Image (tube, rainbow, N blue to C red; front, top):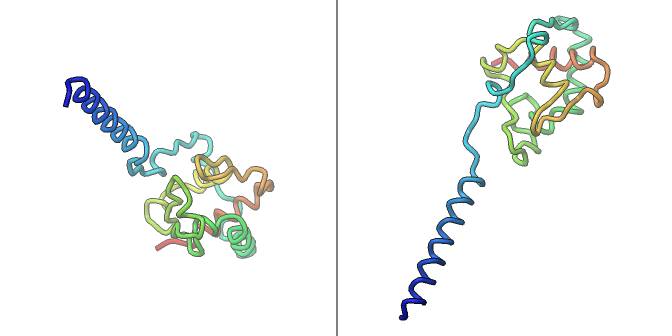
Length: 143
């Protein structure tokens, strides 16, 4: 084998190795706790849910959840809906202590404005009271 062929072979192997490393860096995302990374403005954190404890709000919230949320978040909020596997970000488990520790205002903000795979519901559920109803229903998923 000539020197030129050896150099070309070394170059090709090096180029292939570099491409493989680059693919690995971009293809595999590190596990991130998306709830911790999601910054909610202070004014939302202290908002109180005007629908909390209202049985009718719970029923309407369940209907809205089934229509808009269940496909990703699952029937009981475990993050196991039929579309969950297609998402780039985790859809979360609403039953966990960590999730339930969030204020209603934080959940309202996240539901209203969305982020990444979580769509904004400001227009899909344009009535603020109805978004609060969804939050009321989500609270029923406690472990």
